[in-house]
Image 1 (cartoon, rainbow, N blue to C red):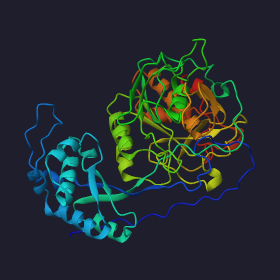
Image 2 (cartoon, rainbow, N blue to C red; image 1 turned 30 degrees about the vertical axis):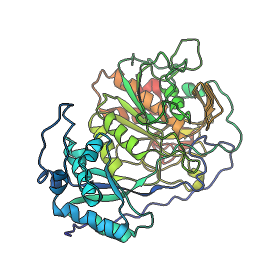
Image 3 (cartoon, one colour; image 1 turned 90 degrees about the vertical axis):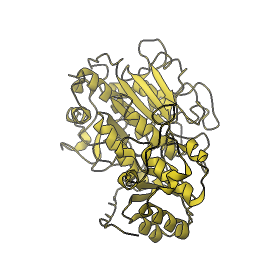
Image 4 (cartoon, rainbow, N blue to C red; image 1 turned 180 degrees about the vertical axis):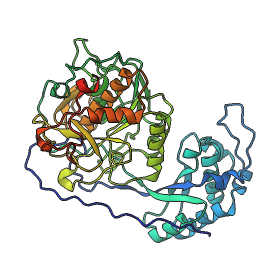
Length: 473
């Protein structure tokens, strides 16, 4: 098995901090407990597309559309030996059980029709992951299921094969832990005042589309029913069990001047993707890797202005980076939460820490950092994140007793303020600003806070507090 050289790994930066006593508790992403940072036994595998395309013949396509490629046992046999060898090595040394294409439209049903199993089935899966994707940026991605006790040295050896780009653990991305401590107090949307929403000359953003990848959305909520919403939830129920996605959507786009509830930051359209399953794992809701990957890929082609990612996890992922880079190249301003684990070690979390993602921290009504809000050199700016009043699903669920409206806390709640502001800046520019320009405008116009000590930026606040009036002036 031919191998390639790999760069030395970088040691993760550790944070030192002093914990301040406070009653400010994040509603989501609070004390992590035994939260897992990877999905046990699950690995992203990226096969180099050129290793497949040079050998697997293009089959006649069926009449159902350009993606409906016919697969046969011969397709599996055409996979070259430099791809087969690392798969066989993984089978023998790591208990490799299964390989499937990462993206759900990559011919999984047609693969079954080819009537191959075992190693041949895995060969067909990696072939399908390439030949069903016209864009080489997202070709060759698959998920492999290994023994949970697999030797990491064996996995690294397989990853060193010339035909393999990388093999990495599937990272978890989380939202919710069971809330502890006192309930957040009610408020009257202090966050809108803090970002100078009432002072801003807000443009018509009805033609602007904002993406929300989250737990779902209650499209029938009285504050959302008149908002233009597209909602994708393949393979899951439409119910927003956790309520997090509905809360985020309300902050972004709840109807204004309708004598109901609250006001959203931007009167824009929303495209929501449900990226969480309906059943928790050990009491925690984790992102479903396939739903998340499919949503990130689809979001890049959905004509979005900005994308809200109120999720986080401590493991970086090359797979996730590829998909987010594609979003940025397609003009989408990607906005992500810094995370709520300051008191548990202040870890660097992703996707917020990826290059060119606009990372958002949280402040409280004191205009100081919310005690839970993570810090770091990658922070872009901050926004209101403590006791944020927004929409919740109309019905209770197995996870949540609150309905209609509630005040929740977290960098998850700060992030949609910035996502909506990015949509307004894009609308204000008439389409003349790209994703980098929009992010820069929001950072450059942020107001400096007293807690920043006169500095232009800090690791706690980034460039300062979102100032919508100035960003749109």
